[in-house]
Length: 316
Ligand code: NAD
Image (cartoon, rainbow, N blue to C red; front, side, top):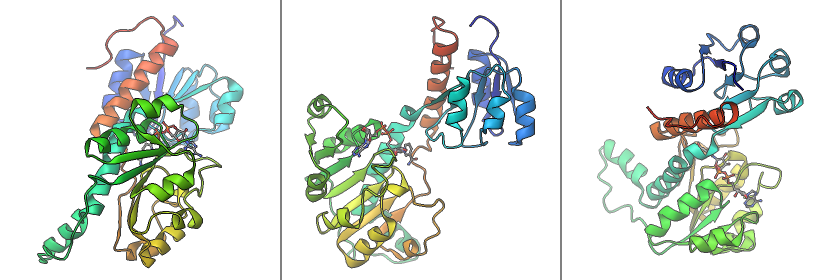
């Protein structure tokens, strides 16, 4: 493609990202709202549309974008983009899931530490004047079996971190070749049941699809060790939330940490009552580094696609 590439950025795309796109790809227009009529007006001569989790990229927008080649989402979720309409029109949908892998993995381990050592609980008590030094005896990650469900980008990073903490890592993922497990000295569980039965701490890193939705069901939780922990930073619907709360209530599970929920923000009052549950508002990928990585990766992918052979540095 030798003609000038013009980029349309969604309302709210940060100035720095727009600046870097204009330096690396071509002239940038930033929308002033998520209004569909404005988007259609502005997209007429644009080759690239950079979006956030908003706006909704509807079939109407795609059909009215005569020269559009790519819809790019610097981040993970592309639920707001009508992929069917893009496919029909030959418009590529790009995202950058790899940009936040370290951030999500670190939060996963951080949540486990907070849970096992009561960091959040004792901090809240102390701020309330309660020096709860002898009330809370924690547990270590050292020496525990850490189960990884989903051995993709994030699952592998978690494995790398907790191995250094002397956990024994077991992972279940039927779609990953044996080499990935042996390379990392991670034990492969051949069945989900085996992973559930072995893990002291189970962290979830699967993508959401028909197979994984509700995978951690009431029955699956029953198969987990008594006194074990669950950390979910993947997608809320992987766990049956009601079954999880019941297992926390009964003491079958010692604790759980959730960054993601069936409905976001969560509306289920049950979760507020759980004292052995800690939670964060879907912040797994929210780090400065993930944001910079996402911009770098997006620009690299756009350049490879639209300006092949024009390599060179992409950082500041
Ligand atoms: P990935 O695609 O690299 O890895 C997902 C893995 O799940 C793959 O290896 C796949 O083979 C495996 N898998 C699929 N079906 C499975 C099944 N039935 N049983 C076992 N394994 C199965 O994805 P990733 O980048 O590692 O992301 C993992 C999860 O984290 C995703 O759900 C993603 O949406 C989520 N995520 C959350 C945040 C956050 O802010 N909390 C940020 C980024 C990603």
